[in-house]
Length: 253
Length: 232
Image (cartoon, rainbow over all chains, first blue to last red; front, side, top):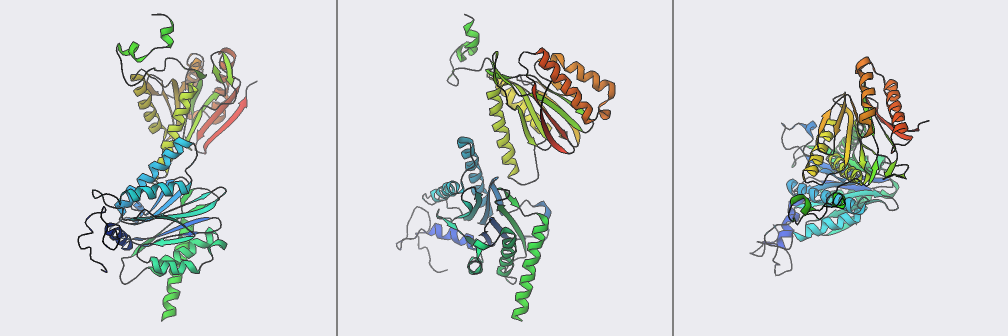
């Protein structure tokens, strides 16, 4: 641990002498301990990929009740990293907010409006001693007419940025290095699902981490909806990821 | 009390005192749709309504759909106040959307929609502030035809045939005779659509607020399809 709180880390309503809010930093640490998630923006949509750790061999994969990919509204997808139950609460808030916007304005909520409102909500949790910040990084993505595909990521501090490609969680640094190598603007979602899967497989640490299941979804201009990858596409992406991992292992032999 | 009081009932008239909650409660429908009819056939249900909204005796809107397609297995349609219909349409579609984004494979079905609608309508009638609509909820429930009725008073029932408004007087007998003569399992989609069209035709002839532009919805194993047609 680099810095010890020294009594300034007991509540989010306190600064430390060197200008940090430790509770927020600790929340960010919680995100760094979680499985990797990433989102890639291509020419015709956004692809999500999640390294979902399989917590127990007794879990039924098909039950699919534990997931890190959510639809906020029909047209907006979210991937979450960090404390799962915190992220369920944040997803619930985002869903309520998006539904309210639709009810009030008659149109689906624009992504940047939702991202800002969720970010404000996350930020509000960094201001008081009675509550703690969300230990969640939430990546939101959508495709909007006239704007095209967009990605936003909200961090525990309440900061929100737009991205062309982004990752969060354990292997975020390695993933970012891989993402930077890609020419995202020239790639379609069909290309990107393979790359996303490859990056997840390559970043997964066999020795230190639990076995994982690849979860993927996309939002494309074609459907304008956030959808789980169809089974055949997921198999294809999964196989590509496994193969890339084998090639990498055999390269290093 | 003058006859005006019937159209302008306030909470104090109803409760005999004052209430902070609502100043005025609905006492009559304003812009209305006329009868709807529906019946079972061997693979599903057929339902029909016309496309007119009347404003008293004025034919106000000629191209208004009173159907809500909930999903490929479930449709509902109503007569009565069109503003109340639009409120329920928004609410139902919002419910369906929030269900779908959970992505857990659990969807609306006719029996669920029928029950929910009945609860809502009964609750409003108990507050003496009804949603002035009588609904027909139809579709496939566990692969079998389902037709349920929910009235503005919160009554509900299921039957192989159903109608609202003038249809109750003119169409129920016709549909019931047909079903009892042939049996639901022998009625094909074509036969059912023919009977329903004849019912709508009779209603157009005899009911002042019915129109000849009609919409027919068929929910069967092939999903849900609708057709707009003009009666001769």
